[in-house]
Image (cartoon, rainbow, N blue to C red; front, side, top):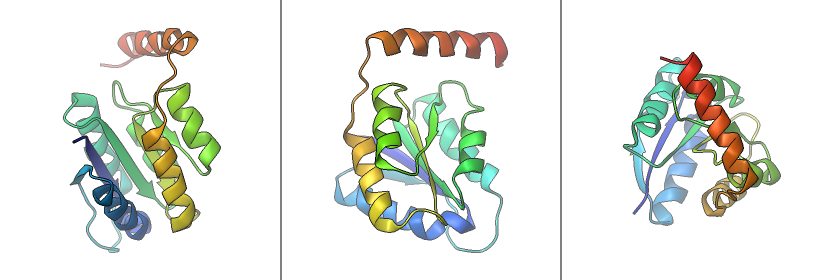
Length: 150
């Protein structure tokens, strides 16, 4: 059973709870790093918690939700080996996996309805990495990480 970490701030809490339920129904083991309410909080705390789990290999993938998804994406991409993709549509979700082997999905709780979020998550989970010419591009990204990240 694949482990997926989820996290949100207050603006993404409701959508995170929806996604968490969806993941459990599909048989995934969910690691919820918080937040656990709609009380105002700081998104970098939760984005970092999920990104650390993905970066360390403790979980295979992560899903983050804030108001727009932008802040979570910025923070998660600061971690070595994390390829966080902000997806507001199914096409982006599919190609973030096919071409970029994204391992963290970022969603906007204030801009993504539950039905669309479900479609995005399902496509993101079921789309494999295509490999081929895209593997060389990922190797270049990893090289940049080694050069520029501690």
